[in-house]
Image (cartoon, rainbow, N blue to C red):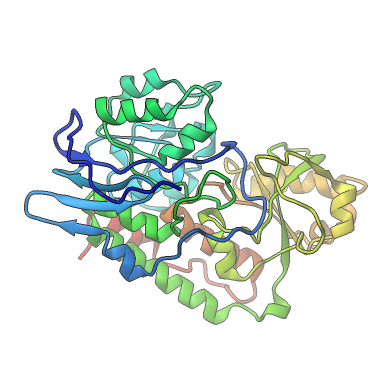
Length: 394
């Protein structure tokens, strides 16, 4: 593995940001897949170590994040070409959502949670979709953003037409890259350090000089996590769950994920202590090398306590019940599943979950899995979060 922690003093075309270490080499990535199983991160950093990667002077601020290393910003970026929706959610949380210019795939950016935050909104239709049978280098020139907020190795290892030399060209001619693919931890190419959701969020906050907003949202997050973990039932009373992908209203086959896997999109499930129904079954999850599906007969052999079905982020809970759950209840095999009998079939949440989404996912699944414990309508102060995002806070 090649790692360059030094700052490149040769400025890009934009003089408000400079630097960038060498990129780390890697293998393959399939952009739409998720975790296939447990993976151990290459590096584990303490919160103190993360904070040491940010320095500020009167004229500039420097932020360090693998795989690109150290970047020195002369001012806050006013526009960003973004790949993963979790990073757009970070920008929205920091009050810089308008700076987002793009997203990998619009349908994968779930935005319903913003409806619960007064004065906060984000319309994915206004973003440029990067993916269309691949990604064109020319599109980056058209966007001409101040920053490429994405893991460059994800591009290099995901698309045949994007080479390392192309990334170096875009870095020099347009703007630097900054970001780390945090949503899962199973890609062979990801040999550089991983970050948790809030470690990555802190880095982005440093880039946009919004540490106070970050600290305020982090405080809300820490409070809800402390509350949930103090009240959640013991391990013997927690259900297991089969995490699946299938966006059809009348599903017959499913792509299985491993709930035990690491990554930002599963942090809320781990906080709640929900266990993986596929553990010990020998069943692998969806990955770059395994695209297999399972049917109701296979699910019945496992017979999970609950089912988490991804691919329905555009539906409300009631819409999901009226379509997907209703269909399962009328299906000759699916109706035999314990999860279906007990109506423990839920929308599985997004693959890309940023800090705001994480708050609502913690609230939703705590109430869904443990309705007798979490009887409150809200588990955190929605207005407080809205005020933080819109800048009306102390």
